[in-house]
Length: 297
Image 1 (cartoon, rainbow, N blue to C red):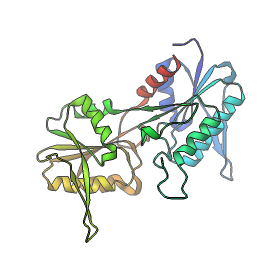
Image 2: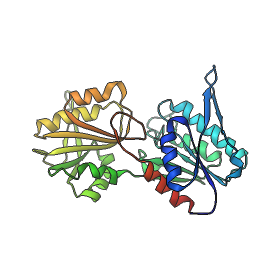
Image 3: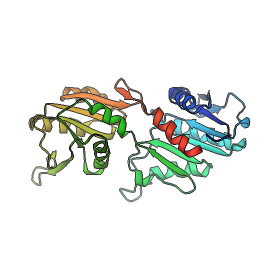
Image 4: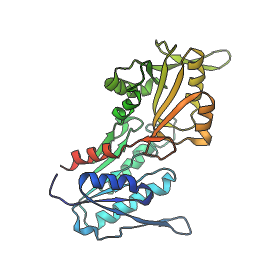
């Protein structure tokens, strides 16, 4: 490691990740003071003198309450830079607004670009996230944007399954199952969607993959409402799949998505600790520590 002294500062709800990063890298860890004023505005304070450190790593789980939690990050970054900290690395395990990575309709902002531009304007050295929605859109001038891939950890879930197949919910996420395939050699495909031109009904089936008698692992970056997985599970079961498993990095699980998925026949739900849930079994903290080590050595 470099001789520079780094401080890992995490918000209270991110202290497990912050503590593990600090322990792994041999850095000091502190928990930021934070509160909300009666009018809803955010307050942030470093509880120790940060001016004795050369660099700072801010760790923030930015979901739920992504608007206020992003604002807390902005305040913490500005305070550190204002007090003379040269290097500020921001760790956002789940990056809010990343799905709006282009202008889908006239008049829309590119929300991902807004978040990245704000952090860049504050003078951060790097932004580290995990399994960002579209890696090619995760970039901004003068800042190193690091996307940590968790796929070798996903592969551990497949070690003892003889009849597994991997499935992406769409063509856009196919690269994720390809990455898992590189660690496992398990066959993979994606769900192809078809729309009936008369009824408008949407159906889907795996592209050139027989799932009969197989355990299907659907892999994606985010489970929000679970709608696609629910529909896919019904179709896969009708095609002879014996089990359907869902693996996602960021499990928002909105509107009781997990209950509805399980009712639809999903056997297991596996999530990472970017957003803690009762299905969290994948710990991404060591991967983030490795990414930081590569940045500051």
